[in-house]
Length: 109
Image (cartoon, rainbow, N blue to C red; front, top):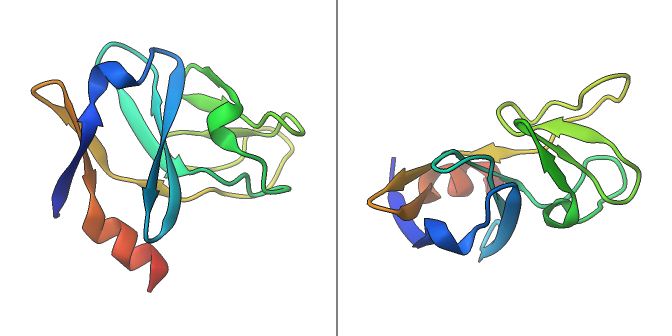
């Protein structure tokens, strides 16, 4: 894995999100607790809604357009909905967010 620093953990509020612009497109960083973060595509698999504007609950994100719910862990749509969003490795080290840029390169290949 090739980890790159994308900012401070404190820049993402608990139960909130932040966008990181990459060559693979916009990646949404979600924070579910003090030190738990997830990285996904920012685009809803249903109608392309901006997931960073959705509601973070448990380890899920609800799209603001049509209320589709996705697991932040797997990217799978929840309930009766079918679909998946891309997920990417992200971690916290010394209060910094680190994103695996190799995973982004693989996603665009």
